[in-house]
Amino acid sequence: MTEGSAEAYNVADVPHPILLKDEAAAPQPRPHIVEFKHVFKRFEDGRGKQKLDVLKNFNFKIESKDAGSFVVLLGPSGCGKSTVLSLISGLALADEGEVCVMGKPVNGPTPESATVPQAYTCYPWLTVLQNVEFGIDIIRKPAGHKERRDLALEYLKKVGLEDRHDAYPKQLSGGMQQRVAIARTLAMKLPVVLMDEPFGALDAQTRSDMQQMVMKLWDEEKNTIVFVTHDIGEALLLGDRVVVFPARPVGEVFEESDLDDKLGHHRPPELMRSEGFLKLYEKLLLELKKKPAAPRA
Amino acid sequence: MVLPLNIRTLVKLRSGRGHSAHARWGIRNRLTAREDFVIGMFGVGTVITLWCVLTYGGIIPHIFLPTPGMIWDGLVEYHTQRHWLFPAIGRSLWRVVRALVIVLVIGIPVGVLMGAFSQFDAFLRKLVNGGKAVPVSALTSLVVLWFNLDDEGKVAFLFLGAVFYMIILVKNAVLNVNDEYVRVALDIGANRRQIIWRVLLPGALPQIWDAIAVCIGIMWTYIILAEIINSSEGNLGVGYLLSTGARLGGNSSGKVFGMLIVVGLISTLTDYGLLIIRRRFFNW
Image (cartoon, rainbow over the protein chains, first blue to last red):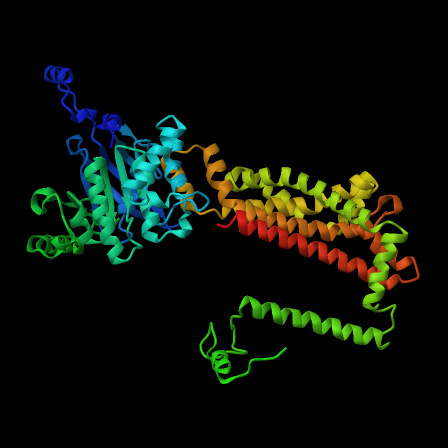
């Protein structure tokens, strides 16, 4: 990542000599990266008669000091973890309560976040390069056409697809298409990157390669990543902090944090067989099996 | 043709491709392109042979079914004696092209807006469905009333016959664009204009192209009707040549059958051309 873009959102974390003085005089709370305050979210079932509580008085935050951390939301299918992502990205809005991203309440698509979705979402009518350019074209950052193209190529290189930039998505494997989606999202250099089970449809080997790639990219890019998965192993391999969503409706959640200290920062696939990893695995499995804390209304 | 009937080819045929061991006459058996073509030509050849036998053999009266030679003579008569054949084809095509341009200019924007905005859809859906429900042949009276079904009238008739279909097909094409594609653009922060131009339109293009093909088919069908009604030598068209052929006397069946073949051939070639363009440019 270039210096300029790091400033875009990490400026608060760099102790600026002048700012530091000001803060000492009047300490100003820096905005949380993501904050859910007493959030309720209901979905109507097919006929619109029965309301389904997904989030019930849900509180959650990623503090500013955790900028650049890797947060994993872990839970079974349909537990509401993807809903949390939609609420952060602004594609869904809370029924009650407030969701804030970078200190600003969300009431439409959030300009500070972008999502790597579950399905293959590369536009089939655009080449690989044009797909990566799509995101930065829309936000017009950087301003010049040439610069955008170079940036897109740079990110294609990061995901190892620079030699396929002229191909169409149809000519790529599922894993490659997801890499294009990751490049498209990261090239926008936004403070928050959301990943909604991005490797759910991939085979085990590709999945493992992609996990290692995402870890490497995260090291380089320093975006705050919120990653949704139902796979405990994946959660422990990637996350610095794992939030466990047991079942609907989600109110209280269990958290396992500081995994960087417990499992190390660099986590190769072999780590999955180590004792420390397996212990944590057991622990999260037990948490997942717990009944929801809040009774269903 | 010498069939290479040795043991090896027999085994090859029996093991087959596609479904299991039933090589020939297997249910939903797949054919190679070559086999498909050969069998298709065999079908065409059979009918032509049968036709020749029936007509040249004098089994069927010529007024009912002309010989291939009479069909050729009929077309040659239209071309050399009356100088009608190519001008008529040209003018029919020109009417279809003009009508198509208006259908596209109105149908695509309206259909896209209906597919993109539910309000537009709610406002127009009942009207468009109503318009589509009126049988096109019934519109001839209306167009006679308005335009006396002269040249512009025929274009207006084709337009009325196809525009409602175009709107509905384009709307469905836009609605069929994967929701995920729209979500990605929304998430990135695209505005409505960007989503329409950069996601919905390109995503719907293959189906819009198909819609154009359907509308050309519809118009080519109705042009015959429009040109049979109120047509004269000054108002040439393939429909006029068809209807006049039956009345001119002489080799009338040759002329009618000849025009049928010409009309069918033009339609087939158009379809084929559109398909090739679709495969080459809108292949997603």
